[in-house]
Image: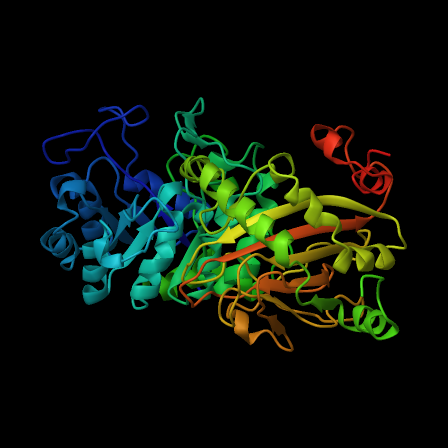
Length: 299
Length: 238
């Protein structure tokens, strides 16, 4: 069974060939290349990975990820982004980026339905409805890391589109407004309550067979250093709710290269879930990603 | 009628882990309860919506905060004789109030919770009484329980993803004012709501008294309303 890192980012220096937006931890001259990632992967015996676009949502911004997918087609798949102004009619954008490129789906940061949970929820009025509809028509994956206000709205779309494969990012936790800061490595730190509301929203999506969750992003939510023992209960809740066949391990590279290190993250599952049966460990470390995301066979 | 469990009810409590009290709250008391529930639900809703956005509260159930301080009816409901006599009996007349959840569960495609027990058997006896504030039809998010699952030798039970697939479970639809008492070592859940009516209920939480279980000052803000020695005792003020 291949070992698959189900979530991370690569980017290169800003150039005409590979334009991207810049930010606090992605200045113009920083690069975290796919070759650097592959070196880390090799040292931890990781075979494949999902490259998640960052640094802009236009087709041009995807140039480097597309380059990586084209260069190493049996090692990587990709997740793209959709500009907010394209949400009402995203079909052309989605088709263009997924046309034999290795991009298999799109990441969403919002759902876009009513704020009040007592209001009638008509999914056809949700801002991202056209994305879900097109994903259903084109068998695309949706990669969700949505704001807390939208966490409960996911269920309506999952219910409406049982054929869409859904991956809840970063343990299903949805960041709250005003809860984000950055640590000294420039990485996001999300203040989350110990009794997380996601226990009653995203974790309840375990009922739907088309929903999986990623075991990743611990550094952003934990108040303790690796192996983030304050999140052990959350890891267990994911396991008992979804089962290993619907959980995928990921590192969220490159943000973890320096702290705690890729090699340590590659051991997080065995450190924090020592009672896993061998078949559960294999599923979380790659089997689920291989099956659910349809990673290609290695050559 | 309000004098506590009959031998048959004792037997059911010990063997099955639950009892149902129809019309436990009725008449003027039910009217007071419903009015206070609706008033404070509306008054506190905006704060709840803000907490959802900040990632501090779930959108799938809505608990009115600090209800004991808001209206005495939320205190009065804790020692209604119809069921409180039973709580006292089952705890050897040594009960404390842990709190209450004045809760509305909005309509949602699935339930806000899965099958679970609340506490392990190492925990002191922990009893909940779920009082329906509106009529809860079958398929309306009703409480469900696995009879006998509270016993130490029961199970094992699994967190089945399809709530209706839990072996041996029993569902409790009921009219407004119905109360379901259960031993929280047992496996329970709120079923899915396929009606058009959000479920309104109050979950009363009691426990067999243990030293220092109630933090000093926990109920100090409602001391004036605890106007009998028994109330002061169950709230840990005496």
